[in-house]
Image (cartoon, rainbow, N blue to C red; front, side, top):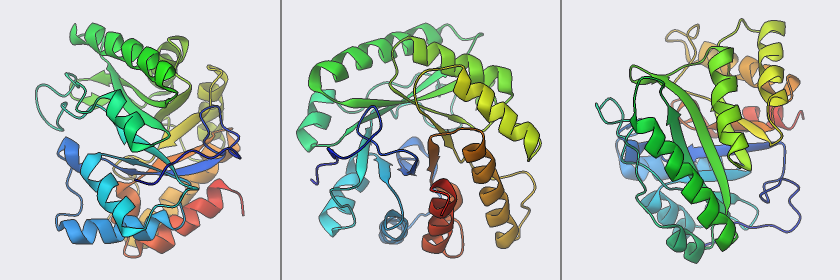
Length: 270
């Protein structure tokens, strides 16, 4: 397995910022955007050529490493909890599927943990307890932790700015060194940039913003979908975001590699 640490990185966990981190852990949660596995690995590999990091579950990570798609410059995060399958009644019951000791043995930079915060579900207490335990164990093993903090209600994450800020603050103040949160649901342009800036200012750690399943305004036109993504990325970076963590929106583009290159250019303001 390729090691993902880099001494030249400037982020708190070794991730050079700003960064585009590729999310390749959806299938293990029951979200199958590309069904044929060989096609999935090929598409992710094409996207990796323009990415700074990778979030992956165990099998894709191993196959991407074996294929040579990963380089020592990629910061790799092993997806740690995947039991909360998409669309089920137990989504919030998201337990570990890999030990931190195994992650450390694989040589990855860190782990990614999804933490859902639902005011109406008492299982949130266990989710927060798991977060605290993972942060403590990861620190002892020298692993970074990317925490995907989500305000949750009725089976979906909330995107209003208040909810995004609240989830980010809770995870941050428990000690999360790197956050991944939704782009706030605000009109494109100045309003969205201000919403992103508010999220970033609420914490003292780098904040990556997740791409999500797709924009409300892209319809069925792939070029419109790409335009929506690039406008969103531009607003995130102008608002002070540390970068993007994206997957599905790139994989479903007619040219995933080119779409990823354009997003990377926007993240790095090239």
